[in-house]
Image (tube, rainbow, N blue to C red):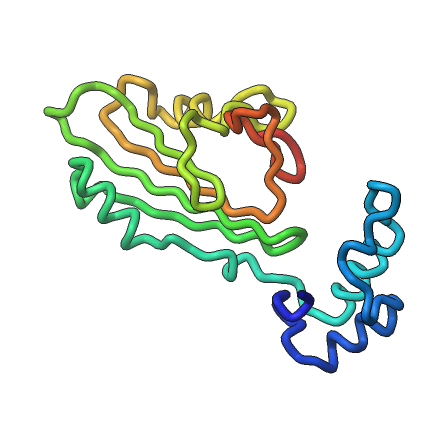
Length: 182
């Protein structure tokens, strides 16, 4: 199974990892003892894997890209000249990628801001970005601060890709990304 990890496709690196951890010829099921994970051996395996590989860069998470966002916004009736797209990639810590797109629906459109959001290529049923960190304010408040209130005829799209997304509830309607709630 180690060969499925980026940077461990070569047999020499896998052999080094398994020799260092004493896990050569050990089945994955043997890392469970009395129904619990053997955290000491798993931590040693992770440490060795990190030692013999490079961290994943944020850009390798899979960018959706400006052309896709533009196409979808145009399908929603956004005026082409108003479309804006931005991407932000984390430079430190866990790889993180945020993509945002925005467009104006025109003066004849109903006065109603539309927000579409998603996490790890899955559309959210509800806005999962309702609270950023300790401020208690979320995406809607940030947009309102930017003069993009609920009655503005605009479309705003936000997509976040992160390897360790934790949700605050079972319905996956609010999430926590490393560094605080979002």
